[in-house]
Figure 1 (tube, rainbow over the protein chains, first blue to last red):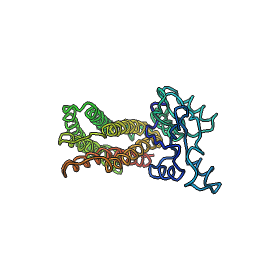
Figure 2 (tube, rainbow over the protein chains, first blue to last red):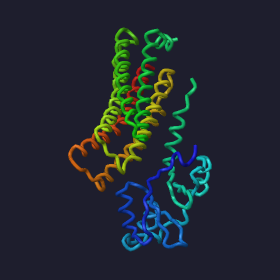
Figure 3 (cartoon, chains in turn green, brown):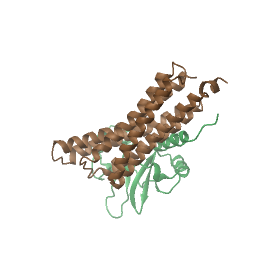
Figure 4 (cartoon, each protein chain N blue to C red):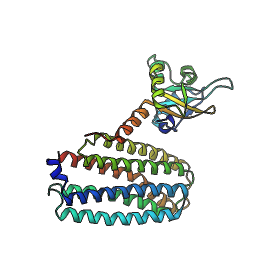
Length: 134
Length: 209
C-alpha cells in the first residue's frame, strides 16, 4: 500500500506571525491536531505546529498564548515523503523520528498528511479484507 | 457436523446464495451511482433504479424461502431483518440518485460527494466479505470495525461539507435547497445503514455459535 492511498488531504495552514491563540482557535474549530505553518519568506520552509507543541511549550510553561507567535514554537523543517512511499517505509520513518504525522509533498507543494491513526485505520481495513482461515 | 446440518440443507443453501446476490446488487448499485456522479451520465442513474427493482425482487424471494422453512425458526426473523436492512441501504442510494434527475446542483462539492460514494462502495464490499466470513463461521469483529472506520470517515467529510455549504453555497430557491439537502442526507445515510447491517450480522453470528 502507498502513502497516496491513505493520506488525508484536509490540510489547514496558518501564518507564522499568527499567535498561539489563533492556532488554538483554528485547531478547535476544525477538530484537527496540527496546522501547517507557512514559510516566512522565499528562503524559509514550511513548519508544523501541533496540539502537543502548544501544551508542552506554551501552556506547561504558563506563557501567554496571545503573545507567543506560532513561528516561535513551530517545528521545522517538516518530515515529508513522496506520495509513492510505501507504508512500511513510512512507519519506519515515524518510528525512528518519533513523530505522529508525516507530510506528503509533490513538486514542492504539500498535498496531504498521514497520521498514526490513518495508518492504524488502513491496516485494520487491509486485515479485514483478508479471508481468515478456518 | 453441527455446522454442516445447520447450513447445509438445500433450502438454506438457496437462501444463502440469494442473500449473496442481494449484497452483490447493493455493491453494483453503489458502483453504478459512483460512476454516475463521476461521469454525469444520466443513463447510469436509470441503471440505479433498475438495480433497486431487481434487489426488491431478490429480497421478496429470500423472505419467502426463509418462511417456507429454511433455517431454525429462531433465526428466521433475524435473517429477514438483515436482508431488510441491506435493502434499506439500496433504497438510500436510489433516493440520492433520484435527486440527480431533479436538477441537483453539485457545483463546488462534487469531489467530496464522489469521495463519499466511493467510501460507500468500499463499505458495501466489506459487508460482502463479512457475509462470506459469516457463512464460513468466522469471526466478524475486524470486518465490523473496518465498516465503522468507513462510516467515521464519511461522517468527517459530511461535517466539513455542511460547514462549507452554510458559509459559501448560494441557494436560489426552496426546492434547490431541499433537493441538495435530501441528496446529501441519502448519500451519507448509506454507510449508516450498512453499519447497521454489519452490526446485525454480528449479532446473528454470535447467536448461532
